[in-house]
Image (tube, rainbow over all chains, first blue to last red):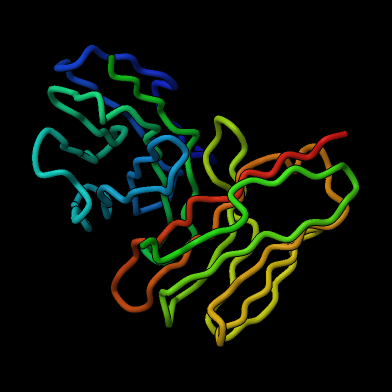
Length: 113
Length: 113
């Protein structure tokens, strides 16, 4: 597609439940980035992919967070056993090359109760 | 301390007026500096991009300037419109192999009729 698509738009989970977010990058873009934005603060980088391979995962919390980009499927970000502090808007972005402009999706707002 | 600091945190102006948003950064040198506009509930959209050697870039009513000596960038909005109400985010990308941008917290601009 011509835009980065993210689903769902909103996600509400009880503390301890699993959350799974999806991102479809722009067609032809090889790189996918995930960011977390808490309370309209600065974007925190989580992980990036080059096609289906992890490119940089230095921002990923060691526990509970995982992500995948499989061929012919939307990329996904999964949070096991959500905590209150996971409440945030999660943005996905894609780019043609790693250093090129990143195009952002509309985000998924995760609320953990 | 964040490597990219923006001011003011929020700004209210009347339609038709001009305004200037500031971005101070400590990341130097950098690959590029971008200004993004983020409408409520949407992902950021790139307005301007400047490399380390450039000092001004325009996009319609938006003009970004860069002073590498003082490590400051500004975004000037001319003849503001109601649709300019948004968060404006300064983003600096490091040179070399790091493709993880550093985001400022943004300036929230409200344009009143």
